[in-house]
View (cartoon, one colour):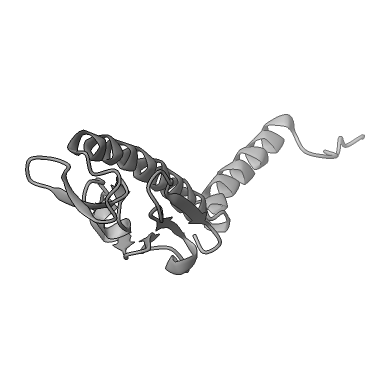
Length: 149
């Protein structure tokens, strides 16, 4: 009498093992991949773009008010917000932040020279530094740092 011994696995068994491995991989992957740093970097790029746009609007308001040549003047950005400008642009990052909608505000720290992401690994290395122009006709500078996001 011959006995038929099973050698190997059936197709169903192989499929079940592959499905289980896929579920385990999908569950474990987020624990090994840190997407928070990439998200904070993208947020800070958005903050820089917002700073540029808001500053351009302030420049237009300063031009309309005739204070482009002034080293220190006040411009009415809205009916309730006044911003100190230097040669038409915000005098520092704190003044510029008055017209930005940084939300939620607890995620950001505003200093005179920069806006930092407060929840970054190293907030001082996840920031947009702002420098107002030093002369009439000059342009502001923005330096974004992502090392500690």
